Length: 297
Ligand code: NAD
Image (cartoon, rainbow, N blue to C red; front, side, top):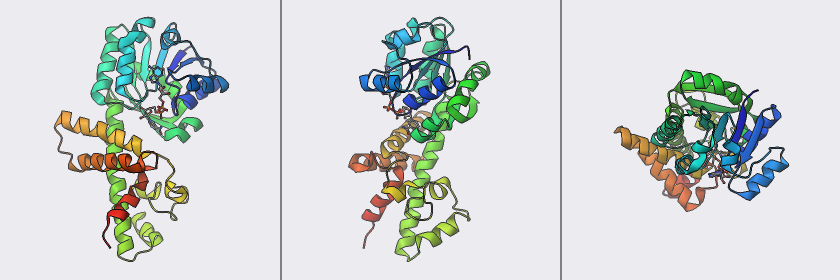
């Protein structure tokens, strides 16, 4: 409990994550560039600082939960690293490009600090409940340091390898999720056209070789899985804008590594269109509506 945490980025995810650290007894100093986020955090019991640099000065861990890698690199280059005491652990929990994560870690280390990336899965519900899963890229010693913090904010932390490995695991998983949701949706629309009841097809897929999370937990049709977003008109859940963001990160990684990822690339295109054509704020399983509308007859 000796860690002093600068928590930067108090948005949908960071706000409740910071609250959970405060509730566990950690000394937290939050900051966000948006005044409303600062006000909400103050109301929720999270002490806030006047700037990111002020929060970082004297902290032992600087935790960031930003929208993108550009925000992170701009902050690191803009004086955040210089404001922290030497040896501070820079822990980034945002979802960003693998190359940017490695660049950010290198900048932190060159400035005399330590670095880890720990993107999350579990969404706002998981952030509030403290049940996130963290995918961690860091040296073993840094993983030991942050494990107790991650236990407060989540239920599971997987050490995936060195810097950038957490981001790598996150985008591999989400690329598979994006592809499998499109495939599951196509299967259900095809089943409809062939005269199958949703429940009958669900009963088969959920116990047969097509079984996957996209069907058994986030089923794109209403009925078989009562908690899935399809039962509440596709309110997220995991919004189409975020799936599109993650698939574009996967696409960048496919390109930089030269991997032949035809389905991943196609899923990135499909979710980009979904997000641009009204799906940004809907659950990503709402892709089934597009598939149904585009189907002939
Ligand atoms: P958000 O936009 O609600 O929050 C990000 C916050 O960072 C904003 O409040 C913004 O003002 C703040 N910020 C930006 N630059 C800053 C700076 N220099 N200093 C201080 N604050 C700054 O986004 P979110 O939904 O909380 O997501 C955060 C990250 O978590 C993203 O990378 C996202 O991809 C990832 N993620 C989100 C979810 C989800 O369901 N929302 C799930 C898993 C992962």
